[in-house]
Image 1: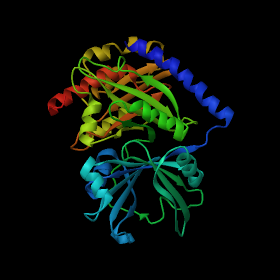
Image 2: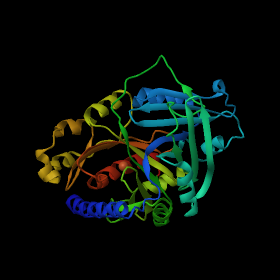
Image 3: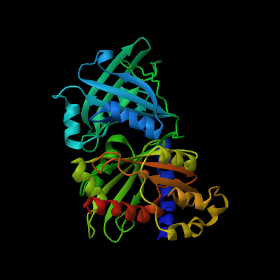
Length: 394
Ligand code: FE2
């Protein structure tokens, strides 16, 4: 099964490259994205969440806005690790839409902010193509210059914010001050966001894919149907969307029919709608990163059975020659391995980081492979199902 999937992936990756080249040739990328700017979470208690991300995930205190900076209705803590910026925001009043968001969804991602050269143009181009407006362009200024931001809705209540900072010399955004802390746990080697996955409801995947194609100019470069992503009990379907330069990748999942409840359906039930399922954070030394995270109390999904690790040399084939990691070490840390024609990748998934079984994290190290671990889906989902069974939601 794994080899079959690897072949499909390799074929589709070639399509991707073709698709991306086509975009460049035709200069059709009406929404050039420079990268992910930040990810903002609406949470019940930003102060305590910030402590968790520092202690458990090695994020660094970076910026702050709240009562002390003149805000009356909210507080935001910004954390940083290499290129990753997380913003944790909590309402200070009962009538806040932030509080409403947390009441409905629990803690979760509200904003996926995208770094652009021209926020007004990004807003105009996407709204012209059908995007629903979240925030008209706003210019924010301080002594370091100005930032232009504008937002549109994507799936559920999730927002894409366009951030233009070419005329800004400050660290984060106007209105924020530097956050200095006496408590600074070391980083764990997380470098950048590799991809961010959205879960949408029954029969919504294709509409969401079309939205990314039509409104954002993305291309669908990998597809996994429910025959590929299935276990004895449950199934899901997934399509990976990429922007023109390949820097931004958003896989979109929807549930599929199985004997028991799909993990995507469980998410939709508890999040009460579509939303971000996981953030994949890249490292260049997954063994060290995962050992650190485990020592700091991050909970990962339990390991697949022994047979999974025994089968790695066969699954990796020629890539075994370039594989530096010791399989025993990978097994000790429950790290998963997958390969495609261009190389291999190492990945691991946390348990949900909130009480509702919703958002979780992936840690990924790419050694040439461009896929998303399709060869691991079965082992991974069986592991998730064991957790679902414990929650009584399978
Ligand atoms: Fe992923």
